[in-house]
Image (cartoon, rainbow, N blue to C red; front, side, top):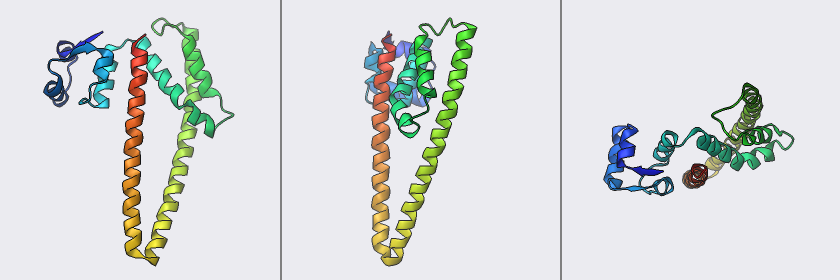
Length: 188
């Protein structure tokens, strides 16, 4: 699939994103993989284009690859819950998502609901753990403040900076991983 200025204009991008594209890549004409590798386009812009140009099977395959990539995290927290794995395996067994039977749709819907419920439980547990960790960190910071206010302020500032940098690095790594999966799905 060839991605170029003509094709992208036909997708009706918003004006600010279109102007950004033209600023850096007005002469670009290349494959989908090459487009995904362009440095001056945001992750969101690349996903937006993917949703517009990839077919249903490619997008579902991308979703399955993403789900598989985080499945180990879920299974660490809920090792006995196989609903998400079962849902992924069921969906992988369908070769064409454009022509599903009612039976296949109901099976997928049921498996997806079980997986959604399990994922919601995992999200809730993760939020609780994060909240507890933040509360503990906050308590420690306030205790330190009473002992040495200026030292605690510096530590808190450094911790915030470190946490911010870690989140940014993690987000960037996740985006890069997702774009790799997107290229794999687009190659179908």
